[in-house]
Length: 377
Image 1 (spheres, helix red, strand yellow):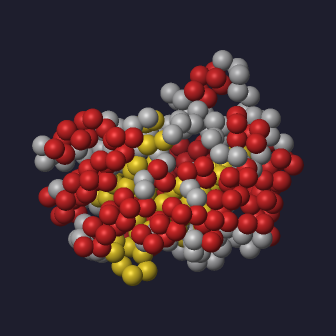
Image 2: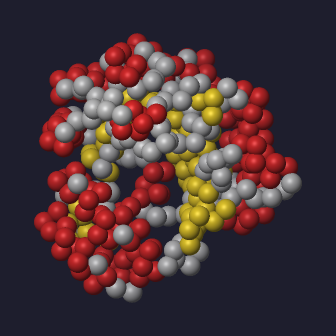
Image 3: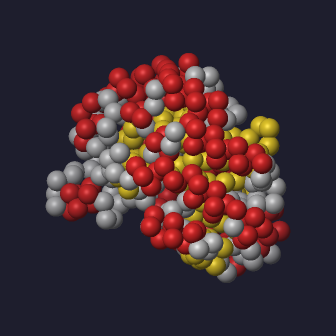
């Protein structure tokens, strides 16, 4: 295994659309959290699973930029000692624009962070307010420019579309403003309403109108056309990158490769048998208590059988432009995609094809991905 995910479940405020585990107002917990992370990493099961130097490290959240540069440096220095980090590793940190400035960005860069993902979402004050974001458009732009000043040459920006009341011209104005900043990577997500979030209840009550299917399609294709024209590669359903800047850590997930997740709310995948998925319960108090007892807080979430492993390989791999290699699929599972899922392949029709040895979904298929992929699951 060579990838490590570190979940930092702390936020200043909770966004109404977010269903990731995070807490607010826990400054004392945040201070002791780096030590907890290293305690979890040092447990015997994890020492057995991490057998090679790390090629990717990803601080996700939550709001990882609430960790001080000193705390990030402490964690990365420990990782350098064991299990080690390769010289060209991708080391990412997610940051909210309102939580960074030139001083702490210089600190993160000095600590070893070499890829920064800025949760900008929009550069329109009204839409930021509706999304519950605490930063302004000016703060977002300033954070990007300060990151460049701090020496970051691999910057990613999040852009959200399909917002209530958003028109194509609103989205394109945001997109053009981001392109003027020249990020190496863009993650462009349609707003989704997840259960147990304030937006879910608001939507059910009729207070959160979402775009019609045709409007969503228009917005998605507009992003695709503009970013391809600007020289970006559309390498995953929601992700675009300049050549050589695809997120290597996220490709680990989509290729169904092993990774360890540490921190309350983190997930891991191990290639044991047909694969095992583990998770750390989203409970900070229980997390600390188990670590104090020297216990691994992670629990097995799912153990895959052969059929489930085949289905998940396709579910993850077909999200990418790379697709799923037929030869590798046969080598691993003993039969090809068509032989294993004839009805599902037929249901996808022209949207799924075997080309140059890879199964790939076309752009129109990505637009209805959840509908098409159900047939494999």
